[in-house]
Length: 120
Image (tube, rainbow, N blue to C red; front, side, top):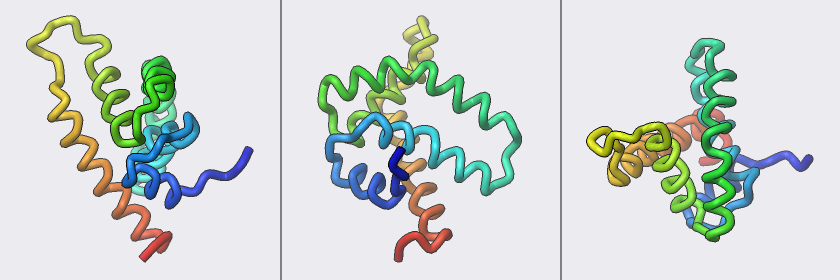
């Protein structure tokens, strides 16, 4: 399997280009895992990643089928994952809030990559 470049994934995300399944998984699982691991988060990361990916996978497939751009795909996937087990409409997370969470995630990714001297 080809090694995936976080910088290439970031650039593709920022340009909202069509993603591959592997790039989406890298953005949703790998990068947050590395960021949290650097913060010395607990071993629950593996369990959470598996749990999240299990719920997200059908939405990843849908986003790829609909040919969403990278950012749009991530927002679509997160929106559906966050609301997948939420039947009560009052408790649903609105897309605006999903986008705000993703903006926070982007900042963490940028900080992580800068800190690791992966780009200037």
